Image 1 (cartoon, one colour):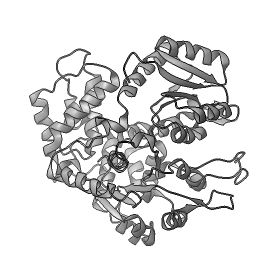
Image 2: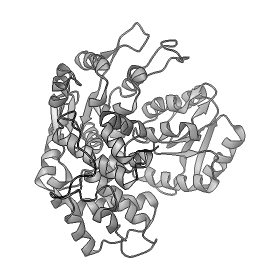
Image 3: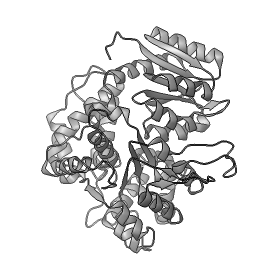
Image 4: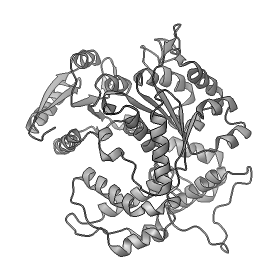
Amino acid sequence: MPQTEPFSCLLVDDDVGFSSMLAKIVNDEGGRPVACHRIEEAQAQISRRTFDLVILDNRLPDGTGYEFYPQVARRNPGGVVVMITGAPELSHAVEMTRNGLFDYLTKPLDGTEFANLLRRVKVRLRRPALESGTDELLGESPAMQAVRSQLHQAAKHANATVLILGETGTGKDLVARFLHRLSFGGRPSSTPYVALNCANVPADIFEAELFGNEKGAYTGADRRRTGLADAAQGGTLFLDEVAEIPLGLQPKLLRFLENNEYRPLGGNSLCRFQGRVVAATNRVLTEEVRAGRFREDLMYRLDVFRIQVPPLREHLADLDLLSNGLLSQLCEKYQRPRPAFKAVDLQALHKHTFPGNVRELRNLLERSLLRTEVGSPELLMDLEWLRGGGISGAGPSATEPSATPSPVSRTLSAVEQQEYELIAKTLASENGGIRRTAARLGLTHQALLRRLQKWPELRQAAGCSE
């Protein structure tokens, strides 16, 4: 969209005065706002037209923005959605950013902050994410060429279930988005891409979250809700961390995959799903089956078309390309000029093993960019992080005993061992702070707590605190 072209904006907020203030800022930034104060009014608006931007308050008289968001994503394809939320609902908003939410703001809202967000939205509207290089798989090594070849093959079979395997931080979600773009050719933004992180959904609402529910289906179900399967109709439903689904709920997912049918919780009629299911995990599913944590029949049903994403240490030839691409994306995110890498810093990167994979590299570059003065010609690399001050610090040597004991209650797979050690190092560097550790690792607070319950010796050794 040319920069001079006005952008359309739907404002959904029941506070008339607050909504008027937002509308004025939208006008000042070159937008054309349409205000409504209930979900019912917003549904009517998006049924008549599409909007470039939807500003969605979380607390509304006839529901919540969190519940309404899947409808907005499905019925307003290609639009940017921003959530306005209070501090108590912040965890919902953070999770929604993984499912396509552009950003969120917390109340009380600063006008300057909102104007800055609108400027970032305008940049995004000129280059939609699913049709831009931000979802491109960076890398020309044989390992990444093999992944790209597998994705092109999978894209030819639009309804085949795809299982993406890889260590934590390798970019399995990016691979899923890239597959979505390939599968739907030149129209990915007109088809829904809906992601669910299975580790973050409590077991008692998992079925309702995925399949929806009728009014009165469970305590607190005061209205009918559509689920994410309905929101993903005609597109891609991405189930991240699929191995974290509780064993008792796995038969429901198996039936869904086998028959392409589902029944909303508390409902009587079956719904038909037409789209692709993509699942991802960092677990070795055969070992999960042997341990009794995952159903064997579900494993086979997921493993129709398998794509293995390599860890960064296996394609370090792509490190320079990845570093430059990620730094460019970060500079666009923070709207600042791009500094250059020092040759000595690139050499230091190549000496590192990156146990946290591409996520760790991106985290390092983001930290380095934020500590670099705006306008500086060179990036101030956080070398202390590389030397051991951050999550990527070198582990104990062969002659040095580990400060954190290995779990003795089970035999860990190679992937589990690496995850265990990464969590141990991060907990140590954060002095046992669970929330800080989760943020550094890119996990939710609940997801990290589940791992600490599984490996209690980590909590004891680090003296964990909230």
